[in-house]
Length: 156
Ligand code: SF4
Ligand code: SF4
Image (cartoon, rainbow, N blue to C red):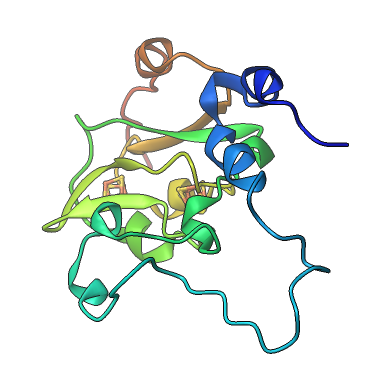
């Protein structure tokens, strides 16, 4: 069944997944692609693409970067800048390259591609953690207000 344009807003909650659904109108199905086809990852000249930031690249609709997996998630990591020490542990360990970092400074989370696995939270070393998992629809301000206090060392 084809998806009508007016249904996109209903199917893509808070615009999550909207880009993917829109792109889907023009994409071939897996069983329509002929053998030997090349699905280009980028539009136009991609010779300098390795030196560009991800948001500056001209991805093709066949590149997984243009597809969002946000609708897979039921819980999401929330980032607390006030506690973060920019150690980059979360950036190294995220299996979906969904931690946004520039010049060794943690900036936040790419919620289009984060799958909500929680690994970034596990590896965050601060006390309390600078990343915590909250419900997908939780409000940022409320999540930050609920942040736990620093745990004290147990007395021996
Ligand atoms: S929850 Fe998983 S996918 Fe999302 S930012 Fe953390 S490590 Fe990456
Ligand atoms: S692991 Fe924690 S402290 Fe380290 S950069 Fe990520 S959020 Fe910040």
